[in-house]
Image (cartoon, rainbow, N blue to C red; front, side):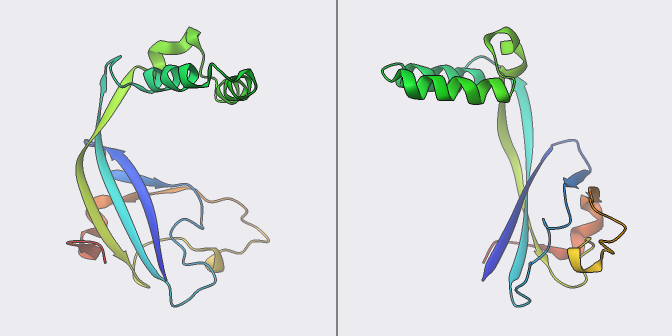
Length: 141
């Protein structure tokens, strides 16, 4: 069984963020093979193919069904995506680099089984990408 953790970072960033102790953990399957995929991305301002343009396209497709359009609008409101903050979503991203890493027992990570859950309930940390260079692989299995 294979597990993949996908992360993205800006081209200039030196680290990735791991949002919880489960993200780089094989879970209850000790035989699982774990991999980390890191996409380096460049963001740029553009109203062409931007997030907001995609939202508008979806809304146009849903316009024939008021039920689904209403549901979509509710989701957008929960995400605080409105026509009033359109400029915040006029960004495109392009992948400039992709790197693959094999996560084994020596990979630097925090896993659930090593945390005293009686005392620590939530973990978020950063990994310096240069520090995991020794775990880099050429391609995915």
